[in-house]
Image (tube, rainbow, N blue to C red; front, side, top):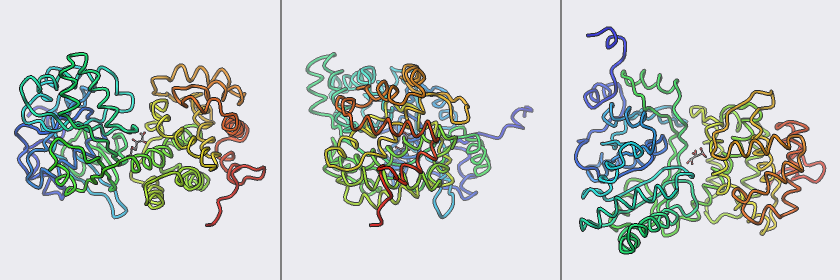
Length: 485
Ligand code: CS2
């Protein structure tokens, strides 16, 4: 034994599972080999703590078709860590009843799309593959992705294999339809016959996926080592809540019943669920991310436990967004969200959520603003959200501490925000007029722009917390106190 191996704890892998189970951790008890039935693109934390655990549940029930060929788009360190661990990783699930560790076993093989595209194409084209799932983030839906998928599908068509069920699990409106358009367009570049085959033989269900999965921290990895007795470089933490609502649109119709038995909700129309989730959960997340970054509250749990933030988020959901939603149980979903945001075990970083805000805001806020304006609902809190984002873009908090912004438009947006800092009207004119973020209508809506300007002025003059309090006190005709009923 070398000195190193004596000091370094062993890694999580197949051989250690029995010992890990004896520590009270749930581990996969099925055979983890064979040809995977699912190819997943985007191996990030979300997939591993969500769909991959649904597939784990199906495998645990003896349905061997749900092993995953996991593809990291670029992150070779993650794919290599998982490979060194036989695809295993631990998830700490935190509920009000306490924390429970489980080891997910659905990932059987891994590859990196940027490094091993031929392996990914071969996996999509493999006879055993039935599903392709994706979590590639909002900015991942680019022609290059379409070309990768179309190359795999071309090989399937040429081999006379059946089409695939191809499920986008990203936070986009009509995610299945958007992915279908991308794949059919890429297929058309290869041949009109392939485009026809993809449109006719593959199924692109829309779906809504929900589970809060913060990026792993060194503390989480240390806790995993403690619980497992071995090191796990891919360990994660998440909440007990999860929801996957998917449109009934599958190559094999029987998959509906199989997924439903594992806790997935199969529906004819995902839109009411998707709207509620994007606008209530993600919309609130993005505003808290901006407020927290500026005020110096590092995690969502710290934001939502401030009374002024909690009543702001409650009012945003209750008065401005909720009444527009078709999801019938949205008040219960809202109440559950307030509790989920406060989960102290999550430690969900505001800067993680603020990442790529320019790509996220278009799905999360403008549809609610437009809907509220049409319905005669207030938009004061949505305007405050827009102002908080404009303040966030300056890149430093209220104590003057600079933070990094991780966003494809960061330098352009920061330059605009800094050029007009201190002049709310000019800031709103510059940042509120971008059609890529706000669409075509809001940049011309003077009432909306005036409300955003007023909020940005208040944030600049009073600071985030006092501006939030004033917005809700409403002495000069702002949104006013939340009515009791
Ligand atoms: C978050 C989401 O980072 C973000 O943008 O809003 O990842 C959110 O936690 C999930 O969509 C929850 O289902």
